[in-house]
Length: 95
Image (cartoon, rainbow, N blue to C red; front, top):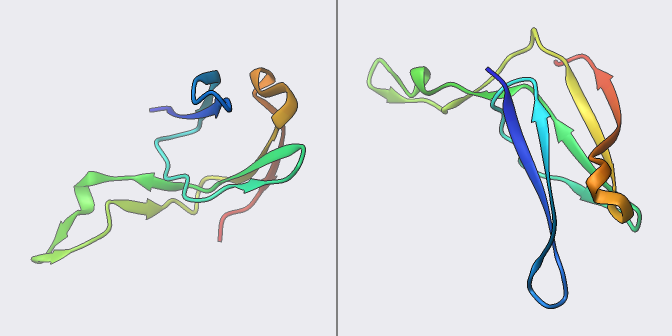
C-alpha cells in the first residue's frame, strides 16, 4: 500500500498557490521538515501506520511502527519550483 504527502504553498493573500502530492513507499508519519531559503527537506522514515498494534495485553501501544527492513530517505524539494515535486532523494538505511 502506497502513502502520500501533500506540500501546500499558501500565498500572502491566504490563498493556496500550489499543492503537490508526493508518493511515499507506505503510509508513514512525516513529523518534521526543514525549510531553507531555497529548499524544503523532508525526512521520510519508515515509521509506518499500523492500527493492528494499538492494543497488546491491555496496554496501549503506538499506532506507528518503525519498519527497519525499509529504507529511509531525505526528500529535497525546490521551494521556488514546488510543482516539480521531489527533485532529489537521499537514501540511507533504517536503524
